[in-house]
Image (cartoon, rainbow, N blue to C red; front, side, top):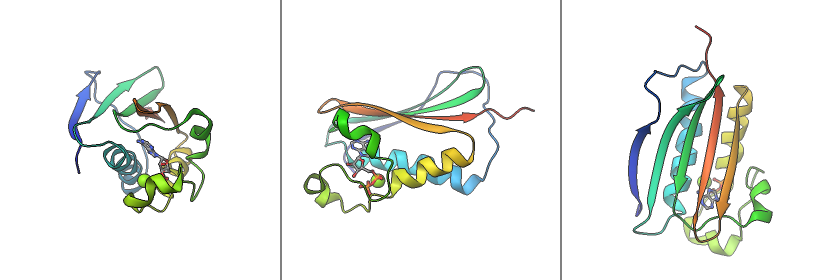
Amino acid sequence: MSATLQLPQLDTTQPLIVQGDEEQLYRMIANLVMNAIQYTPRGGDVVIRLNQDKKYALVEVRDTGIGIPAEQQAHVFTRFYRVNRDRNRKTGGSGLGLAIASAIALKHQGKITVQSQVGQGSTFILSLPLATV
Ligand SMILES: Nc1ncnc2c1ncn2[C@@H]1O[C@H](COP(=O)(O)OP(=O)(O)O)[C@@H](O)[C@H]1O
Ligand SMILES: [Mg+2]
């Protein structure tokens, strides 16, 4: 691991409660955080922020890593898809992490979106419906 991990930054003062399978929710966020660390060269940053809008808890995982070309961003959630296999050979992933994460999000009525610029970094935003308590 080479990136600096800043954990977590809270942009909300309220506890955010979501309902779901704890193990799956953990795995989903872990996959996003592991990617951020894996695809960020030494000296970079990984920041995790928690936020909310009206109905959703928002978990933002942002890195200053290698980024994802615009035309490939839609594909990274597909099973076994890896941006430029050569580029990723070192990291030895399976191309399943984001497919699993987005399937878990969908199962919890949520979703994951990505914004990224090559050489600048990537931001993955996970939104999950807030539990109505
Ligand atoms: N934070 C990130 N920064 C840059 N590229 C990423 C990031 N997260 C995912 N990717 C790209 O998306 C592809 C799919 O991610 P994932 O499903 O987790 O598979 P892998 O096992 O390759 O990590 C990765 O191979 C990588 O090219
Ligand atoms: Mg991965």
